[in-house]
Length: 145
Image 1: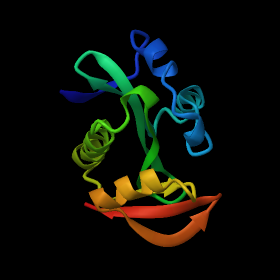
Image 2: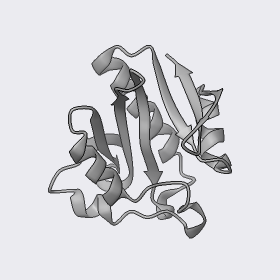
Image 3: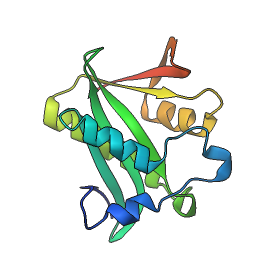
């Protein structure tokens, strides 16, 4: 069973030990960097460990982007040992549901590094669409809920 659980002192080391394949490193921040951002933006960042039963398999961070006044899929990764098992899709669905339930959000945005076709295709399969905006080296996508 796939669940999202808050990052705590009990699972912090497991989250920090997650890695992506070398070919994916240019597409995602390290979890340490993401958690540092979550700390600084603690009022608007919602970091979660992705669990398969009792095993941490990934990390997702939802957020509220105050400058643009919208909710975001801010950070997302599945450990290289657990990819291609459906964890990404389910974690993404749970993260979006969290934002929808907690904040009654009507849409969610994300950014994708050009060339990260695996992520872009996953997001499109959930219903995200390109907005046409490229900002800070990221292609913006939006999901209407």
